Length: 428
Ligand code: CMC
Image (cartoon, rainbow, N blue to C red):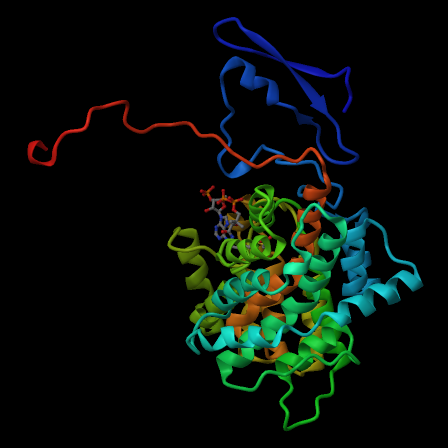
């Protein structure tokens, strides 16, 4: 904080208060408004358009410039040159691992890929047609009932083991949710595979057939995981932090993050985007559908972003990956993918979208890639949850490690009834 920089707030009744101006290493300065409580007032900022809820050293976003850095490294470089487990190490520990650290970390994650055998029984309690995100909320939360030996949140070693367990087990649970839904047997993890190969194996292999991972498709999913690994204080991460601020255990906190991610305005957008493409159905209906969006009948899913107002840097990487995958699978002339490209062209050249700075976001392209990989639409948000688990756990860990952290407790502007006396029912 720059101690010499102060903003002064003067009230209409003449009272004034000094508000320190804080500076980060990147990004805009921030007004420390905590002194406002001395005036007996609160600030009002629903949906947090202008509020930094914490300090963090994990992820930096510049929405206007279209920048996304994990621990200072641009997302484009990580997506091109790194792999998902290395990114996990980076987010969790602050630095890229050296070769030895990478090997040890990978080995530790692999140690934890299986789940307690009794956890498998949770699945049979769900209807087969349950949405896999409903299963994820329940089963990931249930991990807190199994791993009692690592639940002391004030012990850094416990926090590390919980982090490793979550990184390792969430893909296993996700693929079990898919297998249960489709009626196929669960596939136990195979540690000879890389993290992403193993996930694809658990998703797509059956005991009856050999499974050979396709490197182009593995790379595409690896990119999806890297691009979705963290995104600073979004709705689900803020949910994890708020739940964690009360001292709740990490498995319960991550489960709350999964619940928040499920909504169509957040992680549900790639599923919603694909459903929208299916609803449009044919290239000939794109213009009519876009007109409906302009008439405010519905929104174009997979377009727009709260923070990125010029370009989503993840979308640029995903767009390229999308073309690579469609080429590899010879799907360039597929009807649905042609429709998606036409929708992209139409929206990008329409003044409604240009004026409002609405561009395709990462989920528009990741939805198309996931569909091409053969992942069912109802698993799209689950894939996002698998990738984002590392972001949630890193942010949670950062918060708990800060000895100054307090329970989160927003206030409100009350606009309900003023005091009134109870009236017995016969007299109402
Ligand atoms: N389609 C059509 N119009 C839109 C859209 C859209 N997708 N998004 C925003 N607008 C319009 C909106 O109607 C408003 O127009 P007007 O000024 O005439 O009233 C204007 O753009 C500003 O909208 P807003 O609701 O104030 O914007 P926001 O920053 O609150 O919303 C958003 C951000 C992501 C919720 C929104 O763009 C949206 O609903 N997009 C579709 C869902 C989606 O793709 N979400 C995934 C986001 S990326 C994944 C993630 O990081 O979680």
